[in-house]
Image 1: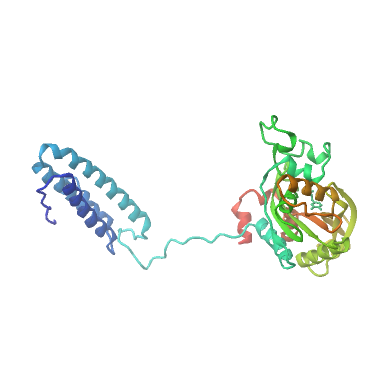
Image 2 (image 1 turned 135 degrees about the vertical axis):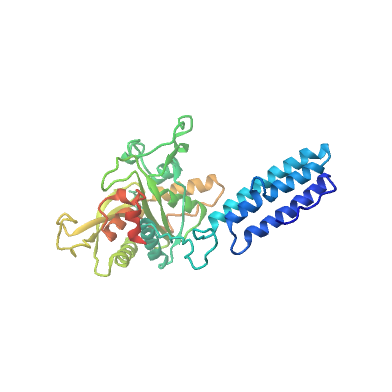
Length: 367
Ligand code: DAH
């Protein structure tokens, strides 16, 4: 048993010194290679012969009455410190059953995480456009009615504005309609946010999470993901849109994939189109996946509607910025696609819910 340190001066400062050197001694013992937890416990914390007990008895015996309280407090703190250093040392070291460190045992291994299939797919789509010179823009998931709908030329009674589809935040009734908060139903509001911040020319891809008030089933989820695109410059035509998307679909699904464009409607593009790709499962011959049509509908697109540029200019003026989206000089196209559907097609996933369940048996397949 080591000697019991003598204590003559019982001032608070002297006590602090004495306890600091006890702490150092303990720290040293715990960090010793081959630290033996059981032996340490017996030597330091044993109730009759333990060093702490002996030091405590010796110091309390000689301490003047007014120092006993100071001593007691410091002993309690020290005991707590020892307990926590002790349990940290116990849980941190790989130990054999006898309690001594066995360096031949394998260390505690940390399993590597893997990219979620949705993030991976989204990043893949984004990188196709980055290689064409597009930059990435992001926006908030909680949006105002102005950005999500009004500035995108949604008439007041458009079905997508309907509270059936849109998750609105509570307690917004006292605000003017266009200031009310909602969960964005698409990534298109980031088109507006970007044009308020930047002057043309503009080439942007906008990945993100969107929300709709929809019942979940094998192909619907109230939370899903989109990648939006926006290109604004001089002399941008529908041919540019077709060429860009045809290239993107070939880059994503293989060079033999064909695209075709059907007239469609979106309030913020005119003309608008739905884009179909030749079925990646049957090569266009017709199968169950494409409902025997040979084609799969994949995204919406169109030429940016003049009303959108006007809304942007209007808001830029309100913000004290130049209304630089002059429809006499510039034009643009936009597109939006669902990441979840593309991921499901690429990886053969039949239930969208698997992408949100956090089930490791599913996710591990993508590691
Ligand atoms: N925002 C549309 C939706 O969620 C998708 C879309 C269609 C985006 C056409 C576009 C576009 O940018 O031009 O249904």
